[in-house]
Structure formats: C-alpha cells, structure tokens
Length: 316
Ligand code: COA
Image 1: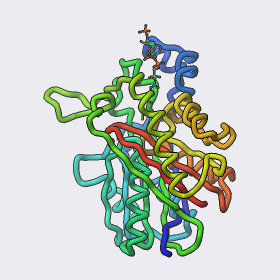
Image 2 (image 1 turned 30 degrees about the vertical axis):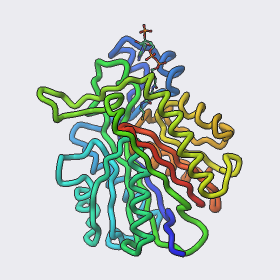
Image 3 (image 1 turned 90 degrees about the horizontal axis):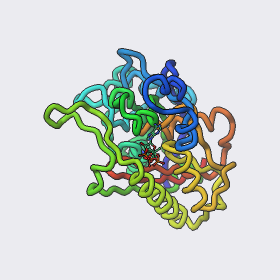
Image 4 (image 1 turned 135 degrees about the vertical axis):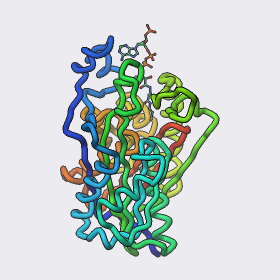
C-alpha cells in the first residue's frame, strides 16, 4: 500500500530574542507571571525586512539537505501560514522561487495554529493518490507583525519561526498512519486577526480563558480519535508533540491522554507560540537532538483560530 513518510526535517528561528524581562520593560507584566501562566521564557522576533518566505525557505533547505534530495525533485510545496508575505501570490510561490524548485506546484493553507497538520494531511493525500512523489510541507509565521505590543493579554504569547518536512512516497510500514482534521467557524471571534475591517490594524484579538478551555478538550478529542482509529492507546506513544501554545494546555492534555510528561516534547519556553511553525520547529529539534528514533510512534496534535484542530499519527 502506498503511503507517505517524512524523510527530512528542518527549522529556522530569527536571531533576535525577546525575553520575558524585555517585556517587563514594555508592558505591565513579570517574568514570574508569564512563566507560571504559559511556561514561555523567550520568543524570537524576525528582523526588519525578513519575510515569512525567507524563514520558510531557510527551514526548507535544511529539510531537503536531511532528505538528501534536490529542490528539483520536489513536485509540491505547501506553506501553512496566516502571516503570508502578501495577499497573493502565495508564500509557497515565493518559497518555490527562492529554492528554485522549478517542478513544484505551490500553494498556502490557512488553518492558523493547526496549519502544519492540515498541510501534512493534504500532502499525504496527494502522495497516496499518486499526484505527488516528494512534497515539501512548511509551517512559517511572523506573528510579531500582527501583535499589539501594548496588549499584555496577547503579546507575551507569540513568536516568529519556521519548520519544514519533506514527505516521500513509501510502501513500507513507517510513515503517516493517519490524519484527522476539524473546524468550528462559529467561535471565530474568540481568536482572530484581520486587516480587512475598516480602519483595522492587523492585531490578534483573543479571549484567552475561553480559548484555553476549548483547546484542551479539542486536543484531547482529536488525539483520542487518532489513537482509536489505529487501535492504539496513549501508552503506546513514544512521543507526543503538540502545538506549543501554553505549557498548562499541554500538561492538561497529556494528563487526560495518560501520556507521561517525559514523552511530551516541549520547546515553547524558547520560542513561545509560533502558530503553524510550532509543531515542525519542535519536531525538527526532537529529530536533530536524537530524541525521536526510527520506529517511534509519534502523535502530533494542534488547535488554533477558526477554531481548527487536527492530529497526525506517525510511525517514524
Ligand atoms: N502580565 C500580568 N498580568 C496579566 C497579563 C500579563 N501579561 N495578562 C493578563 N494579566 C492579568 C489580567 O488582566 C487579569 O487581571 P485581573 O484579574 O485583575 O482582571 C489576570 O491577569 C488574569 O487574567 P486571565 O486572562 O484570567 O489569565 P489566565 O490565567 O487565563 O491566563 C492566558 C491568560 C492568556 C495566559 C491564558 O488564558 C491562555 O494561555 N489561554 C490560551 C491562549 C492561547 O494559547 N491561544 C492560542 C491558542 S492556539
């Protein structure tokens, strides 16, 4: 049976670090408050002039290098982002040009923080249906540009970055076992950003408390859906790599799933919530530092604005 397997990962985070102590000088907050409520200690901020596609292309080059393939081998590029370079063309088209991946079809997916798993699912389907042989899936965001730096409820949470994965056609047992995607548009007001309203600046608007509650429930539901679909339990997982939004959300979800914290991969303390980039940033780190090993069972789990939520179960 044809399926898809991740054969390379890469990531990129801008150089500039913004710590909680830096934020103390900008707004009424404290390192203690941010650490206790979110687990975040610092985040990265893109340089002036640096674009989402710049970061995406850098992450992609590392993923291609690990995969051992050339840009010309790629036939599909999907970028998950809600902070694109322009309204159009897609950020994926800019990436295609920067990589000189001349044979690739390119498009973006907007599913906020669930975007990477949505993109992974589409790429997996394109490979299974025979439309694609090598697909490049990227999550890349510059949330610092849509953050209101005077709003302490939101500006402490987000950061910039990119992560990428190369998917290849396989017939072996390793690879993407399943993906599950969901959305509920009626709750859009609880987490959104818009540049399309009159006089609007593109700032994130969020009701944190409400988002928190829904996120934990949705992350649990879609994780269980993935496990049950494959006849597995939380116990069977080697790694749980959830969207890196908030340590308390992750701990609560892991507890409900019965996954011990030493099997949960977290790097949000260094990057904050990088939206669609958070899972591939964490996955690439876990692969490169040798935590993720061949044959491991990995569950990716995400929740974001929309609302959207999604999971992917992978035999590495
Ligand atoms: N520093 C200090 N105090 C702050 C603060 C900050 N940065 N931000 C808010 N506060 C204050 C509030 O004003 C409030 O004060 P009050 O009681 O005097 O009104 C108090 O802290 C508690 O606020 P509340 O919003 O209830 O805190 P919380 O425990 O819910 O934590 C979040 C706030 C945002 C950290 C939390 O709700 C959260 O993480 N939600 C999920 C957000 C998320 O992950 N979104 C993306 C999903 S993809």
